[in-house]
Image 1 (cartoon, one colour):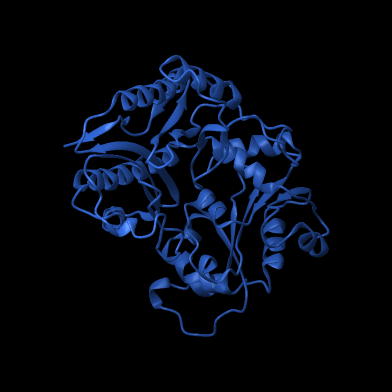
Image 2: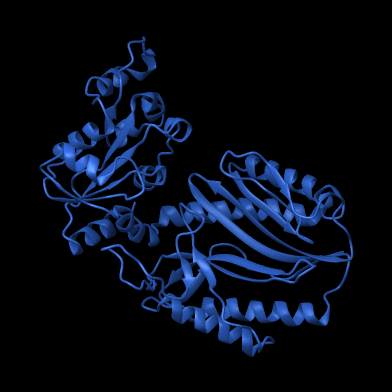
Length: 407
């Protein structure tokens, strides 16, 4: 967690604390991946005081206690429990830690947040996630010592945009796993159907410690996709996904995974058993020039709309003069696949975001440059890579990709 940045943001907006209620907020604050909350939707929260000397407090349901202890969360920070305490015997390996947490369990998540705010000495203005539980009205009805404001997620979002070295390392590792899985698929192309290629991708990702999120192999519309815990799905041209990946064709792909809470998303293009055509070289060369210009020209203080103009201009000057204006040339990435588009300014309704909002780059922001072209009836082109913003340009956190030719 970038606590220094969070403190600065709270100072700017006269906030004494922020309350995050998403599972990603717990990962961000402590590196802790909620288990029961994801499965059963009991709710969870993290209370982060403005004073960086005061520890953040995790607010968890009673059914989460065992997982929290096993992860050592109670030794890393303060934990406030809510729900009905268990009367069952607890393992001796927990050495009284379970009973200690249960002894101060509160009846509800609202009561637990109230206890956490009181323990932290917070009695002023507090920003709370707009889309989570509990809501601002629920908290305001129970806690009269604080003034609550919506859109707390935007404070955490702005902090999350600037990554710590540990976060960048997790993103790098996620990208390495993703690239390894996708390269295995590309190398074996021609021997698999789309379905089998997706299964190979899943195996390599899981063997590497990741969780597959999506695998799309565009070829006439056929693709295979995995969501968070969802069923596997095949969609596109009927029967296409069950046929072998054909030689003599061009394919583009987009693949993503989760590693220790952080997302990797990459895309590329390969030709199987054929050489690039003149159009392939021209189009992919133009897309590559756009990404290269973005990597070289991006600077702290530049705005997203400025970067978009630079990338589009480079694509037009290097082989695609008729490229129309695009909605985006990439997106930020981190605990979510999409942490904001790299494109035109967008309107907002949050007191913590400018309106319109045009993200200003800072060092250690991580973004995915992404340029793709639809090619009706065929596979199109895709080029996507992740990079971290530095004082002078952006440094890819994994190897740059080019148009690949597979014999």
